[in-house]
Image (cartoon, rainbow, N blue to C red; front, side, top):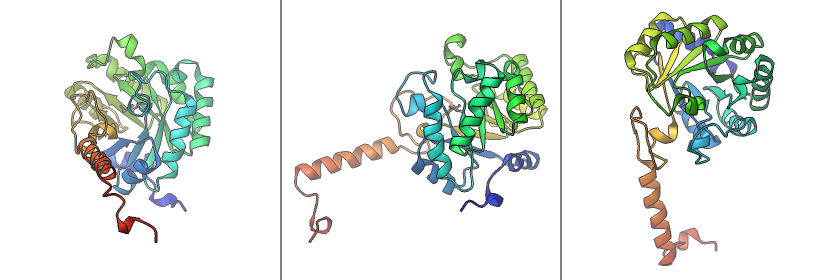
Length: 266
Ligand code: KIV
């Protein structure tokens, strides 16, 4: 049974900002990973639409659907006891008007039992953020590099427009967002934003001056093959370890050394 007293909430995060305690966030898309992150004391788990690239092997996050976010969000939330679970609104939910956005966010909250949603955008999405917050949906605004707009931005590039970043962050604060996620901006800009707003900032590729950090779990564990952004630190090399284990299994089956007597039924 979930103990509401021990769950990380928007209030916990607010207090952490005030006390200068760093906030930890990682992504998860399935039950065992979410359970591991929760038991390891990660404060927030993001069911990111990065699942399109990390789990489905697509080249962008654009094709991810609401149904897929619900499918993954439900199992992640069910696996946790302490972490605050946040589910992404996939493209183009935030662009289809306030009523549509609130209705999809509410459906995601209802069906996944998550504790908040994330939406890409700041100034231009402020009406939707305000309406979601008014409806009781804790909302984090994702500013800086917005992967859902990769085609409009001309690629996954560092975002250097400080005026725009500050305007987006302030609009998110005014609309009632509980936090701002800042992706791929120069460290000094992210720090400036962090110091000028009262809600927590969570950075990815945004330097150490943010109130918290987020990474894609598959990247930081070295689980996936292919391109890894410069801002990722690989804390493990799980892909090499798993490859060695699978090769050993294959060899042992071929040589009939697996299964042995202890792994057989009498
Ligand atoms: O979708 C996601 O996982 C994200 C992170 C990159 C922050 O938005």
